[in-house]
Picture (cartoon, rainbow, N blue to C red):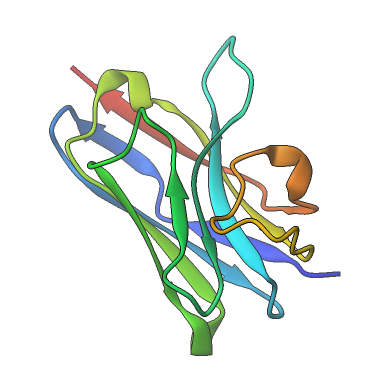
Length: 125
């Protein structure tokens, strides 16, 4: 089974930037980032089909976050710009090996079978 290792979380002031990275132990069809804020359910925020430019973003982060990939290194990055206090959450990398024929990868966590341990992002006002 694919294993995922995340890095890059931390604390930043509002308006700042952070980059998260996730290294997979093997190739998968799609990878993405999800987050869970305190007291809320986990939500999908950015996903990408590996080896393509097809990505998907939640409305809450579109225009501020950018998911990129380095396929040779089996790594995806999440560049988070103009961070807001409401972006504070535990961020999880996820990978999925099932292609359902969607033109863009799903933000539904049920479509992802492998999860990283999570990395905390805290944004102060």
